[in-house]
Length: 325
Image (cartoon, rainbow, N blue to C red):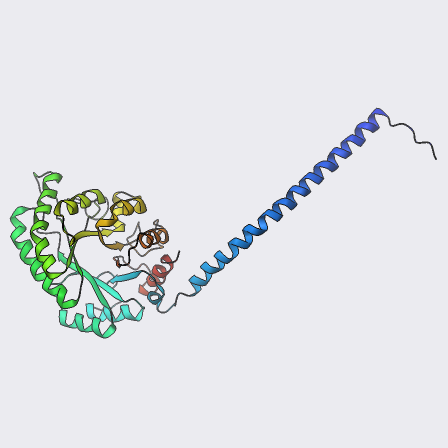
């Protein structure tokens, strides 16, 4: 056997260093292999979910996006103009996009016969319209007799058009009156209107606004006072037009407030913010919000009270994309 000299101190240190380096490389290689092995099941689970979402997106009909939606969207035919002047012409355009419902603002001065015929021909439902607007205010007792008369007339229109509900608005601030008193006046007006609505089988939906962007000086904003008013009126035919755009600007936490006040929701409306355009153009994650409403059991209409940013077809595609979760 050839003679192998004993290792010197330096040689011993070098050998130990090489061994340590080799050990480190082995440890890192093992760790990487372990991580790769652990990641395979995660990837295997994630892939089908991703494919399912992609498939759902591909399933949206690009020409009739409304037909792909599970939520029952009601196109606001005041804000979705389609380049045509009359409401009944717009109804036909709505049907062409695959949507099955509409909403509009005041009924007076409209060709209701033409509107009703267009809806019947196109198989489009009218979800709601405005029965009492901003002025004169429902928050002023001197207007209450007129409010009751107009609600009665509006109920007849609702039955004629097959609309299950009507929006009512509280009114703008009255100089010299505090918010608490104005809300008390709204409660009194709705208590008088509730029996009329109950007899007709039409629900009144009270709409809180926002005062930061669109309706400065309005007396009702946020969910809490609207819920308090509904509780005080105590009628199943008086609910809230829960406009998610206004609620987002006024109070945020859309899903949390929705859960807390859900029993008082009569109807939802939406628009993104900023801009008041369709979902997908602003900061609100409507996929999450619509999912919350669905999980809570809501199957009613959701009004698209928003201005199409780049035309009605593109807006409809964005609405359909927001309805995927």
